[in-house]
Image 1 (spheres, helix red, strand yellow):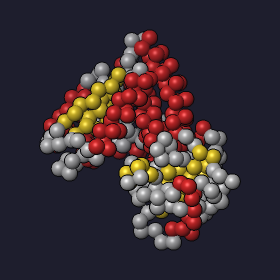
Image 2 (cartoon, rainbow, N blue to C red):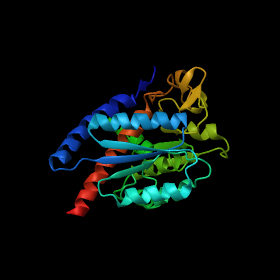
Image 3 (spheres, one colour):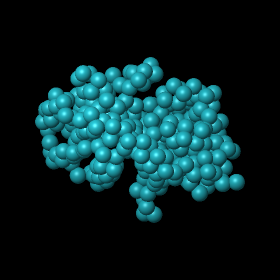
Length: 285
């Protein structure tokens, strides 16, 4: 029996339809959500992501602008630009596209963004709120994955979820969001011993290692839900971290690459931007 494919494009489309209605309601009271995206340099993957974000924002009626800065932009001038956007009441969300050039301290940049405009959900204050299960902006990729699982009524309470990867952007927050949903969570990473023994216990397996087709069927328990976060550019095109054709024969649900997690990441950025707009509106009254 082959796995049911969870198409992120379809789930994202439904969410964007709802968002469009929310945005229209905000516009009726004279409030247009406005997102500023800062892109430093000419990284092809980053340019592609930013173009996708622009298109999606337009689709739901969010006003967005990309500020394109050269590769040699200094850290000081980038921080100055962020402080200007923090102070601009017309700007509701700020996103700095990662990765940044090596001469710029990413963490310093993340912490410079106002927590109230941090629509990526990476500011330490928002991470702290997430850890304590408070209302906040959640990191977009893990947030999107939770929404995908819920869209298929996949039970999370008491399930054993294994997250392969421990990045600050996906792995760590993914585990925390699953914990917030009452799943039992195990992390695996490059130093994990006997990884296969652990992943084969997973009811839900989230793969975010950044190695093309790393996970084959031997890592997966019969009937597990497999979410592939990887995007790897290879000679045969884009592939995930999961050997899709192999794993879909043992999993109950699986996400494809492309058109799986990616569209959800962008959609949750839009959700956060609308929430930021509502938050600022509340504070201004």
